Image 1 (cartoon, rainbow, N blue to C red):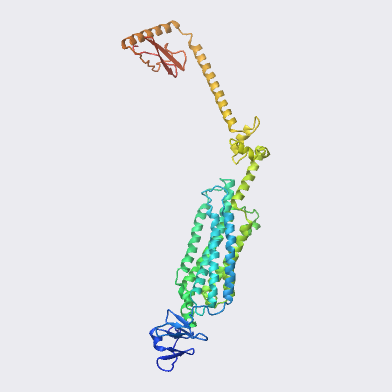
Image 2: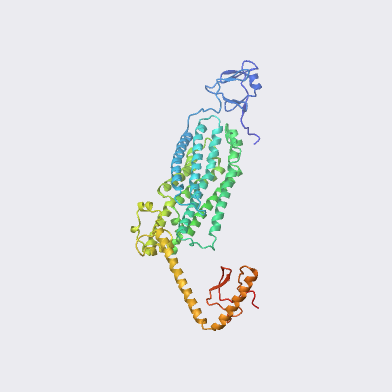
Length: 543
């Protein structure tokens, strides 16, 4: 490497004297050139590291003593005509730009909500695929347009750097696009099963655990590819202004160990995508019983669009591995083969976007599919319950009667209640429901009151044959003591009613649930009513 020069420096041709030099037939002041640190290079350019001018053919620059150049063409201005690389880049960039419109249309179609949002199935899950497709189309569009200046520039500058940057950025975006499509397809299969039966899945499996860790593993590998590829000094790829400079700077930078390690992580991400697809097929599709069919079950059960996307993704990753080991096929090389670059680098990306947009155009919104499935399930349940939907009230009836409740819905218990209310004619209304409830309460209260009276009568008949003389004597004694107490206190005394000592006491009341003691005082009547079981009535003066 010691014999290789970054760019060959040439001595200024001798002019008429020691302070004169002739470059492309133009006499220049040699002292001024040395003062501003200009040098003559083997690629026929004059540069001081910050400014560069062409000095061949019709380009005859002249410098004044103050360092100002006239009739000078910058090395970084477009010089050549647009070649094959630039033409193909414009075509692919235009194709990427067109796909953005279709992607936005599909995003609106599939991202619109027609059902209430649930925590288990977030609406952003179905939109991530389209978000990544928009990012992929934007990166491909920018990279394709930058190829125009790669062909036209005499010395490579910002154009080759931007094209290479967005070209390598497309790889993790492609992986994320296919991953989100595969992941959401599995989530969509789960949602359909879960919507039909909440208890369809066994809790004693590793299904949820795998679905939790698979996205983390995938994005770990994808971000490793991103961090090994994107954060770097991209200005080194501009150093292709001479063969020696290319061999010394650009080629080693394009084939370093970071690019090689990043290509390995892309294959790990692809393996994760394939495993996730197989996991969804295994968990959410019906397995064949025939052993011969099990061998080809997974390729048949997998959606055809994902098989195509995985194949295209594999082609792109293989090209990426070859390009980081072989400089000849590197996308960073400004004069590389355009057929290899666009055929294996850009074509898989544009085809993935086209395939997903075509399938998105023909597929229906998931919420609408669920609504139709629920309607079919509801119709099947109505047929089992014997509910005739043709007897349902029209729309104008519902608007005129806000208390109207239809006889069909998604709740089986509600359908049964509505079916019971049909007995007696007419659809159930809020008014009829309230009337039926009130009548039911009245009937129950009447039955309870009748039962209570019957019990009181039986109790009275059981105990009324006791010694009436003894009862009257005890009552007279009680009233006498109560009257004497009221005369001494001058007021009304509340009568305490402690629990009876025994059920055989002669002081038991006649009714088990009502006990009333009346005490007369100076023209007023005081009553004390005790509710409950039969009790002994005693006063404070009893021994």
